[in-house]
Length: 549
Image 1 (spheres, one colour):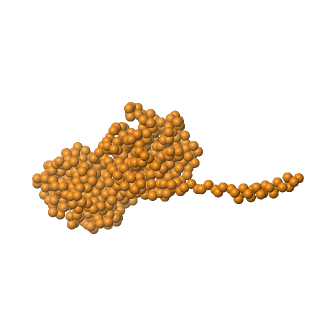
Image 2: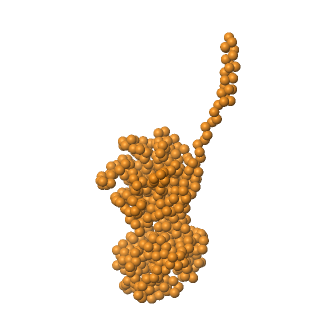
Image 3: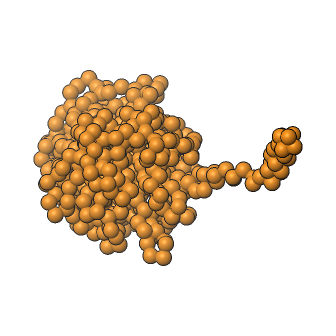
């Protein structure tokens, strides 16, 4: 009886005592913080340039599909004409005497114009690869194909007459690039394949060499004193050329992958870059002023290369360049540019021992980042989305075929299909011998389980918002870039539980980043893990994020 009457009291006392002495609730997991690690230009490549009648510097960007009016002092983009107005992929620009702007649409083969009242129209279609454009002093308009053809045409500025072929003998591969009209009444332009500058009689079609011995001449302009200036993209140099003797005098030094040049009314000289997306004012042989800062221009794949003593190296596949970034400050430590090295097109990246795997649209390469040296290149892929190393083997996701492939460098043509029939295969990740692929249709799939092929692949998580880049942490957790939601999500590979860890990112998707014939895939919104941090690429903003907790 005593026990029975005291039990409730003892129980109540015990509960109260336990409540008073209970351990505090475990702390919430540390929040992730996001910061911009590296910021590039507002444009994806700066291509042709010309000063308009309003004194503004008009810069075209084929990959951005933009004509931008830029303040030459501050670099601010004052006005943009983009796809919503009918601009698709402009590569060079000039102005007529009445203030009408004319530009070439490289990937689409058109010549377009914008009249002073804002009307945009196509006036000619001389063929894909139409590149440089310029007027003669008496208002005749000329264009040349370069990279996808080599014909030189005269174009009716009003679009009534069909293009007139002047010559098709300036190739192979490219006719003339960035052209200008000379004081002697002839058309001048660099001939990249011959590493020389040509002048053409546009009525007869005859031509002759003016100067030679360049590395990769890409554009030229005359200043107000009729002095010819030639831009060499291979070295970044600007030369003043005597059109009578062909003698060259270096007057400026920018960077390899420089694209075009323009003079303002006071003969101030400005240079653009297809590889770094900068705009520089050339002040002297060794002095430049930054108008628009360059840097990441097509940020896509990311790779963390472990180093000694815990230190690591961060690499960004930036299409026309491979960039090494300081993982703490974002400072660019080194770059390998496609036109001065064999790095080729770099769209995705992954560590391969002490080297790197680089994926291009149709290639996979092994690259030595210390020696800036191509070790091996494999071709014949169909729109590579991502690459990954699994032991000595190389894994490739192909966007075009909906497949995941595996091959060994010793037998590169022996390619095993690990998965097929995927809607939009994107990023790859591995933890041990487990292999995963993101499918942009919304799924995260496991392709290999402890090295064994899963057929069909196991659905780890579904309902994701445009998953692209993925990476595996040391504990096996998967980090997924959900492009459509602008976030990074942590996924448990066993249960599929998805937890957003970083939101509010500005990202673009694979299929949104194509321009005609250049690529059907675009640039991966990627993620990599390094030293406990995450790094995420953003093509939309030309930036790399760092995410810490």
